[in-house]
Image (tube, rainbow, N blue to C red):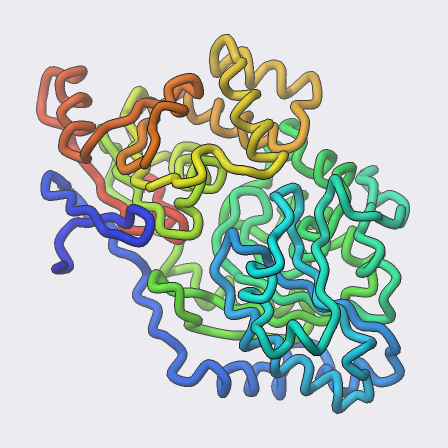
Length: 425
């Protein structure tokens, strides 16, 4: 496909010939040699001693990795991390790889092997950290009152190391850093407190913002109460390839990568547009819970690129429909049960919405101002009860918008709306 207007739809691409403007994905070149990039990052850590020195004397080490909801070269990174830990004198039987599931579903043995790599699966212990199922340790409260409940395997380790991906995030500003432990390995009490609607809509909680962001600040306070002291973070390009790697202090490594890539990720466009067609690539396109992040990045920007009442079209295949985990299922139930977006927003500000309810809340905030549709869903019937339309093609969605407007629509195509955060100029 040419570089003309197109958007991701899971692993495929859809043309958007009617686009008046096009935001292509960030042109992030693949790291020429991933092993070399990881080795360099480990040898020259950001604001921290080298891991082989930091880990000396540790008997137990927990290494956290993301689940399958975001692409991450975990297996390749883990090989080098284990070498560093061995240099520090930590044996295989003292190392546990912990998959941070948050409130997503736990993963199967074959999925876990895919995330860690087959050679490592037989050498070190592996387990999930799932907020509703995994035993946690109560580590007290943050200064703002957030309960700190962390998976026992991580909380009781002599040292914790986290592997993650830095990319735009609606609440934390950017993912990566301490988030792999502070949320990925947290108990449901911690996740519920940090994700409650009143907190995620607080001033300063915004995509692309780390400084002065109370959500990010709370995650850092949570992490201080854990043995987390080191991280390896990667930036992925639109092809799911590692483009950059940094290691060292979790917050410093995250901030360094975010600063390097912010110009590619955060873009001002000549809005407003009547229709924004937003591409969602896999694995974020697997379910609506994850894919809806693209809608919130666009709809909840300080200056949205979409006109009030405009149509936001997500292109995603959604083979898992709303999602399989407890948070995803409750997200869909809460959204479907709402009398209106405004009623759900008001309810979220006065009472808990349960696991995943914060995503229903932010989607309702988008629906208060814009219309939302999906193109490409394998089984679109589940969308209508959520207040989301489904179309067979981008052309059909644009035609519906034009019929409503009574004129030609001005259309923006965003090829990769998970890593391209657009706002009106």
